[in-house]
Figure 1 (tube, one colour):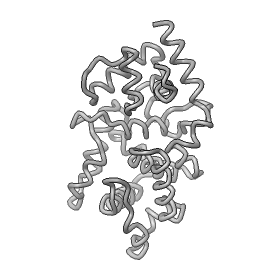
Figure 2 (cartoon, helix red, strand yellow):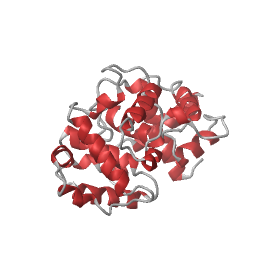
Figure 3 (cartoon, one colour):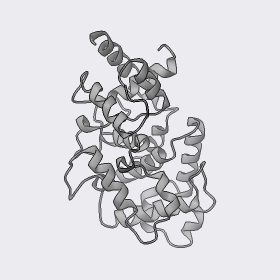
Figure 4 (tube, one colour):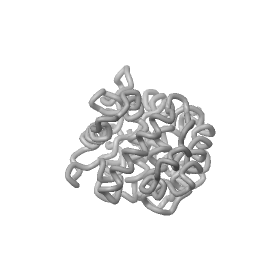
Length: 253
């Protein structure tokens, strides 16, 4: 366990630096300075984060261009003519129907709230990441005109999803250190409560290291992994996302 902790700490430290940003979807919100712009483009970058990273980044840049590179201003002030900017957008199975509903939700939300963090809280208070994600998905689609097809793009522990993309988004917004990768702009969700995102790289490495025992990859698996990572750092288990991802890319394990 001591040697494993040393390895994970070393790799987390190595990959948790600005050079990591360039070829990762987190580079998208890093292109903005306004808090709400970071939230919005971070949310879209995480939502679209499947497939080749180069393609993901290109599609997110395309989306930012469609928002006139001012997503918060666009979303809170668009008219019907402005929505024509969004027609025809597509990334894999995410299409203009999904985009238009996401934009509609965000407009309704920001009309009543200053930060997207509130969407992951219950009456302004944090309970747990599981509660946050279940509540977010429920409220996101609690609208008469919510398209059924769009539900597949917002995961929830209620369906036993591992919620990789939303956990990644929360890591970006919540983790607070001085390394220049994660933003740490949300202060009401403790980083100690974060659940480690599980993509194919993290899943592969964690299994080889004995940090996951469940056969399937689902919400319970994400919780199991995070509980084991808390043995190495109970205050910041999600930092090991960097290590597990990096070890897979290096192909040393």
